[in-house]
Length: 102
Image 1 (cartoon, rainbow, N blue to C red):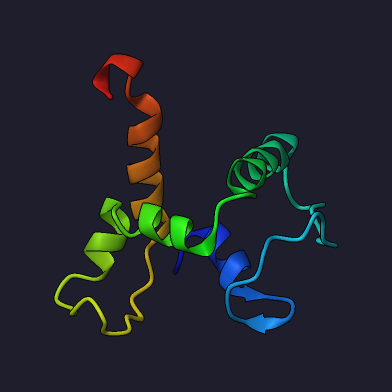
Image 2 (tube, rainbow, N blue to C red; image 1 turned 30 degrees about the horizontal axis):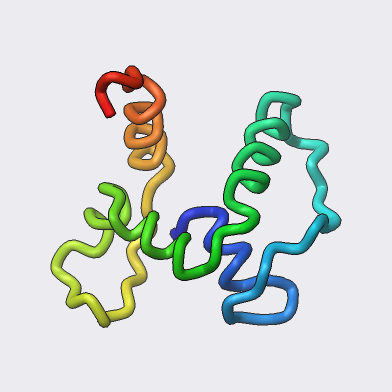
């Protein structure tokens, strides 16, 4: 599983390839809580202007991506899914860091 924002960039409504994020899109958000919707909005708004290359470079240096690609060459296509537990552990750890921790 790729970072959620990368999926939107990579497999957008026009097919696979690098495409800019649309200004808005129709999505069924009724199953999301208000906090979840707010989180999605914050993430999309933060990354909206990043290029696909910038997103790729940022996510490919993170522990979940590195662990999922363990044993693969840099150019080898990987199919291992990054588990929700791994993502939650990693990103919760980032949130728990104080600004002094870097």
